[in-house]
Length: 220
Length: 183
Image (cartoon, each protein chain N blue to C red):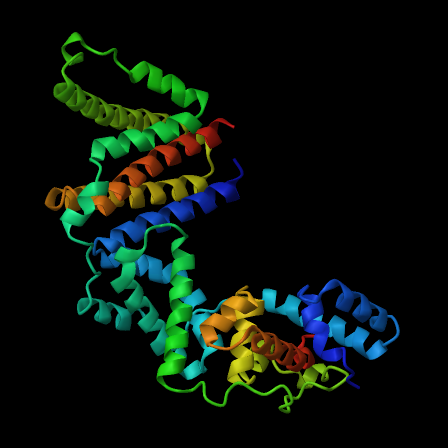
């Protein structure tokens, strides 16, 4: 049997009644077995909805999608002129991303960095243009060295990790390497593309972070 | 670091890398994104629309995602962005084919929601089937609110109704579905 409160039970469950309505409904629930039981059922429905699982389609839809991609290339970005205001060079982005990693990195990482950083040369001081070039080149060298050393460390540490973890790490390194290679390839054609610059820097950062985490996991 | 945390991080990194690759035109990377997300998208579409439309609309969602990838800036996870795109495609489909007319039930329309006891287990319909049997308006509100976690205000905006209608539809849906709980 329904009463005036039955249709308010969902709002009660979702916390959408004001304080006076909630108090009145709770007083009603203490005396109405029907509403009390209905409330329990509705709560079960809400809980059941949270447990529904996703299912794959009965047939693979990729072939139809792939055919659609042929005639619909991803839309490219706005003209370069509009992007230049926010464009950064790859070395600048690398510098920023590596700096983030360094700030949050482990003592091992800091030690590696300290070993790699050469002191400024006299020729670089006071020559802004050449100094920038020097710093950019140094950042690139540092990032490459950092990756190489972290990779060497991981090669030695792999035996401390279980097979499944090693496989996952390798698979993800391969994905990141592909992303780096693709971004570098695309940037050769469009060096000022902000999106590609950001993704290259992000991919480099991800690789350093992944190597660092995998080494940390092996050492733990 | 616990292995699960590492694996979650690696999965997120893989998706981010594949998203960047796909945005630069790499269809193979986009296929990996499809494989990762197709179950979630297809299930959402199937629940929101009729099952026989699910394949076509799911394909449409992924083709649109491919076209719009350059607008994805990474403010949210790719999966979240794709999910929102799927909801928009479903709702646009609903408007395009005009199936919204007459599908929102009035408060007093006879949905079979008044039985005091659940049906016996042998007669109990699978919960997903029961969900599919709901009138479209009630089904879509239930899916968006209770399954996908949208708020009534968001649902009302998306469906072009007032929040009170969304709340009413949700209650009707829950009342109908309670008879089909697995017990």
